[in-house]
Image (cartoon, rainbow, N blue to C red):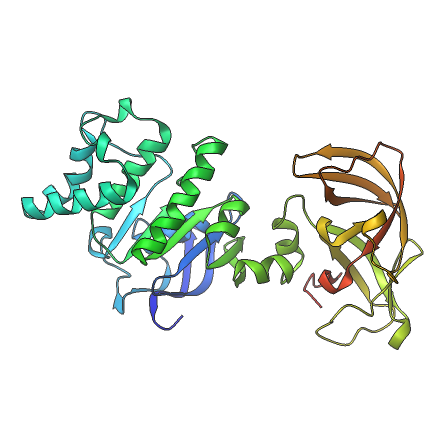
Length: 364
């Protein structure tokens, strides 16, 4: 990130005595695709609406392209917004929907035609221009909604859960199209979703939110492999990271994590601070970082578990196991089948694991 496109500075939003957003600071680079990710009520859409000017903030500033827009109307902020609901005018054709805002702003007719032609070409909706919204599929309507933002020819695009009303297949298709759109336009895009797959596949960086605060802001790979705290670790990943509660024991080459009297060597774990014996911790391991039976590398520390259930998922299978009194999930190849009750051997790749302090819930 060389230049900042959108800057949120010390932003707070209160509804009466309720603090919805709490002293947020966020810089978004020029041309960056930033995803605001979190569960319902975390404040992600509220933050987007503050940037858009649809909500008046209680404290702080919003800077867009070096201009303080904190108290400007949405139309004066240089943004285009795409909503969850398509918000198309049903009585107008696609072409009229695309041109409506430009006509209101008294943009020249030839310029309107140029912008519509460009948006229609990018979004591949040229054959739809004379249709009305009722004649379009959900995916086509959302393309038109994106086109309506696109014709404004602005620097920053805001997306508020634009794919949540679509079925799974259409979501996957439009996700690819939005990614290609960003690559083509190279505009700054801020995208709100509760869907972690959308976040991981679309984002240059993800801001994971909880309770009106940003828990972690980083690129998808770092967030997935090195979550900052227990909340982020549990929120990202499907199925969720396996969590084992226990404590640190031993020192040096004997340093280990112990849960229910079962010991895991911590020699392969790169801790950010010294680990003292007796410290209460939570070990997190993702399903794909646990090897089963013949996949176990030579010399690895071997553990034993029993298969509780198997979930075939096509390309791979998910095994739910009982190990040391803990229930955990393991991902294996789709060609391998395990009946309930089957005993298996396990090896944990602790170089890819996460260790959290039990009290602070922060990564160690």
